[in-house]
Image 1 (cartoon, rainbow, N blue to C red):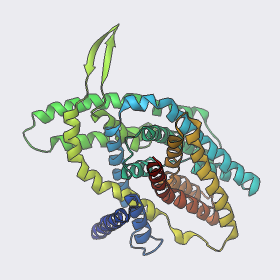
Image 2 (image 1 turned 180 degrees about the vertical axis):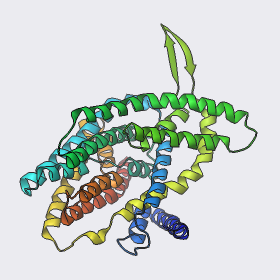
Image 3 (image 1 turned 60 degrees about the vertical axis):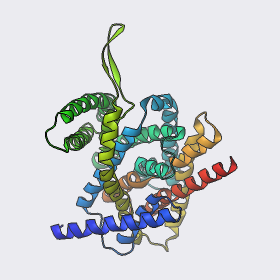
Image 4 (image 1 turned 30 degrees about the vertical axis):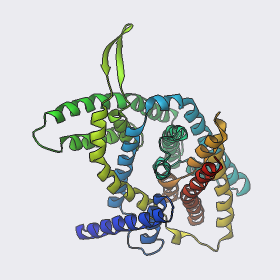
Amino acid sequence: MELHQFFLFLAIILIAARLLSETAARFGIPSVIGELVAGLLIGPSLLGWVSPDTTMKLLAEIGIILLLFEVGMDTDLSRLARSGGKSVAVALTGFTLPFALGYAVSTWLFNLPELTALFIGGTLTATSIGITVRVLEDLGKRHSDEAQIVIGAAVLDDILGVLVLALLYQFAVEHQVSTRAVSEVGLYILLFMLLAPLVAKLASMLIEHLDERAATPGLLLTMALSLILLFSWLAHAVGAPEIMGGFAAGLAFSQHFGFRLWMGKRPALEFKPSPKLAHRLEEQMRPLIHTFSPLFFVMVGVSLNLNAINWDSAFIWELAALLLLVAFLGKFISGFCIRESRRNQMAVGLSMVPRGEVGLIFAQLGFSQGIFDGELYAALLIVIAITTMSPPFLLKWFYRSVDRAQ
């Protein structure tokens, strides 16, 4: 892309995102829907002004990493730990059920090849943590008990999705699966998620020390951004999604996160949370997050090329309808596998439904490897589009109904 084209496309994306998110908000619609619609409007589906270019995708990735950093900063690990078992149960159910049902529908009802059916099942396992968190934030529910369960489940869902994607990609390319290679990736991801917040916490304390003695302004923001990017790179290096690096860095700067190093029965060192540092960093990061995170949601819309769908094909609609039912029920039922109030169970189930960019990655990989033909790819695009666009409306209707009943 030429430099002047990049500037034009970036301006179009930012203006479209802001105008349509503002319009959506004024009509009482979650603003993320406006940003997704902006992507459909300016992308290949309608006007064709912007295409899913590599440079734009990189900026979108920065946006989602910064959004997950903000989520990490707002996350109370003690609350997340209390909902840990519930998050695991929701994630495993919401991962296994859509995968098994998607595979069964593809093989038993449509007689599709085994590898194709596995890729379809894998596509349905995804939960877009970025979209889910943004919707809960728009509704003022991001700090609720059910949101903590959903965040934990969505993080685990992403990790499971990466493992399955690695396994299926290996099978598609090499026609065999190495259990050792998949196990190593799983171990690396687990170690990263355990150790990264602790190492980032030590780095955040060093950054705070340097910032107090800085001779020039902007050191805190620069060093925090560098830490986010470094941990995103480390996450990719061990096989985890890059957004996990942003989440780990956010945890380190959280006003709730601290830990102790024990020597025998007594703590040798204690690393306390720093609410003052967290507040200052949040103020400096917020403009960046509000600028870059809409790029991610617009690019999700841009990546959904609705012109690729043969709207007259009966096969597409039959397959899409059944997969949509499987995709919705598989995630929605996951909310009912935990012991919570019926209100929270329904909120968790609805929050796990959005597929977004994670589903698109599966679908595009299957299409690029020749596993999906045009009709299969189109059916999956329909499923991903509807499961991405409908949950914000359903969640808003649900919470409004519950609040009215109370």
